[in-house]
Image 1 (cartoon, one colour):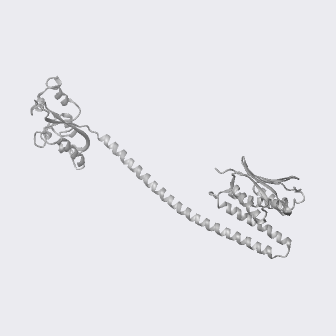
Image 2 (tube, helix red, strand yellow):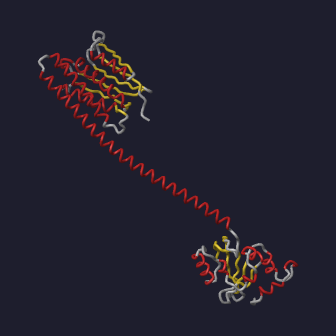
Length: 374
């Protein structure tokens, strides 16, 4: 059985010569700081400290022997870690903890402390063995990383908060703009409706047939603009204009106003959108072509078939109106207002409008460049 003086007896062992207890000699000569304390004495005092421990802490051996190792603790030592260390010793269990300790001169250092019980043959705890490693560099590096991480997280949090505030502000601005656009849309529709009503009143009140026809033509163009406006605000992206929705709406409006329910419409309209800036020109142009077809291809109550085609070919959009009427020679009417307007609107679209006519009918083809939406 080990006695209380076992560790004191090693003081006389010349370990450098390899005589005596080889374990005690190894503990004495190792560069790792080590302590042995006796739990059978009051306050578990230190009964052995090797030279490496004295070098680490700066104390003399006489200042260490017989004291509890808590003298290494100081003002910034974590009391929670001290509590865990004390409880492990009370349970006679091993424990490892990084503890802030202080040297004799007051210099702090981080101590990777391991404490474990040493049992005798009867299973009783004879000593507590403790080893220390100065891990100040590692702990300070970890703390530096933690501080930098905290700074980064704080910066990210601040930036996230700024972005959220900016998004909220943008959302409020967008809501205000949406309200403004809705108000503008409402007023434009009201104004177009009022203009249309004034033209209808004027057309009905004039006594000259030619003037009434002129006012009716102007009314048709105003109605076409109203259809363009309605289509623009039916499209989710107000920067784009849905040609298909517009054509179907315009055909329906023109035939309804003219009362021509006997004209069969063949729909060959594909999904095509163009830049909103070209919507007005296209709307007026197609209106001229469509009203011309209704007035001339299906004149005198003649029924028939009207085929409307819209498609995209590469970077160009093609709109075709084909009827099965008697055909016409466009040369005599080359200086008419309608044809002049079609040509000017075609140039405004950076495109062309051409006619092909025969006894089997007429086809107008409008072609202009327009890039597809991304």
